[in-house]
Length: 411
Length: 169
Image (cartoon, rainbow over all chains, first blue to last red; front, side):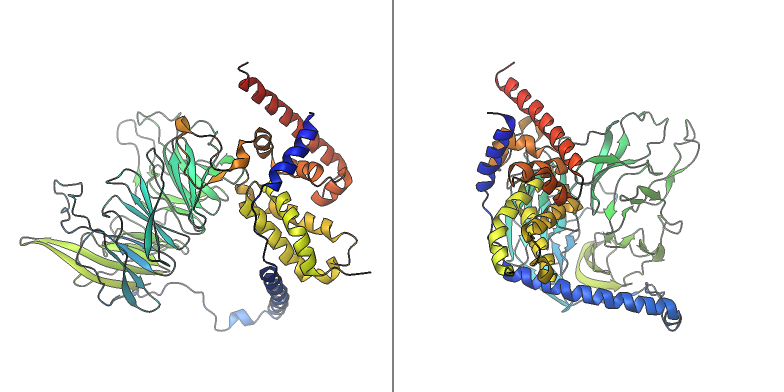
């Protein structure tokens, strides 16, 4: 059989086997009708824009740019959470609620000789809904959740990587049904698990990257990154431009003689391409704001007095994976902000080193202290532009005092 | 001239257009989305489209372009989805859960660039002429011819290599 005939038969046989839906003509008509309306609205909006452009006076009267208030925002205490006092719980914003899970009852004091959790992690959790200002309990996690475990938000669900006790098991919590289920994870170890805005979770499998689509429950293995020199010390960040692998090219000497400037490879859907080298030497805490990657690590390194790099290189920075443009963090963003020691990144906002950094405007403010709040192990998550803080511990001569209080800070 | 009803055309064309879109995208979800989107857009202008000589060709062109132009859909082009996670490379199982992926020819076609896949499916599944394919893809017939030739050459090489590997040569 010749190739063309084989192709015809392959298409005929294989495509006939597809188990497809019958389509939904009513839904399609409704969508089409909305498109009609949208087109009419777009035309009307364009007309208004023309009028404004020609008239030139509307924008000059009484309109101000929208941005954070200048009073550093305010904290307010929330209703009591249905959780016992604890520190180092994990929290994530699902798009509707902040899910707080697990935590420790015997946290290790800073600088003490117990860097690894002592096995007192909890399984229970609760969710806070800012729209109703209420808490409610959620189903207990199938495993204890403590430091080292990680919660991600994907497609309105919560993905738990149980890293500490069971290697790389993955569990998913569905707020709709208030149930946990386990998804089969890789048999090998799994590295970072950033979460994409569209519900896709990425992780390394050897040299490859696997993607879990939380809404469809499907895994996909991406083509391997063929670019050379290979990147080492890799991190992966899920972005709207595709997964971005950051790392240091393998041909950079590891003896510290050359600044290990971070480079990024992007998988754009059909192929990998390498972005221009960034200007930073750190590769630790990238997160996706929705428009750019930010590694909110202030400070710089110069290679030391002996065999220095000739100049200082920023540790963190900002990278636009769509254009490859890298820029440093704002100079005002430092490692000694002096505010509340609460750490969380979400959407355009970062809270760390006692500061709050608005990545959209570049504005950096001190994060106000929380009166009466613990100074250690406070759990935090950004909830659609508001910062939720829960629990924590205070270490004193009389022992450890745990908190179950919660607050919300609005910029 | 009798104007076809939207619902009738939808019911008649849906399965074949989904199959065509699937052959180009390699993802059934993407294929159904593309067809749904094309029909929704067509609904906006159905009075005009329904009076065309070949509304089917118009819709097919919309569907193929939906698949080819959508970057997010193209992102999934090389990818085989599976309800099971992929194993590390040294323990990889071939083809995941997709029964189609086990077919050598299908896998070879799936590895082609998207536009070459579109040319092949329009030629060997939809049975279109070079001119019709050019109309659907918005290019010249000469481009269709060269894309088809390149695709077939690649397939020959891959199928030959596959056969030789199977026979231990």
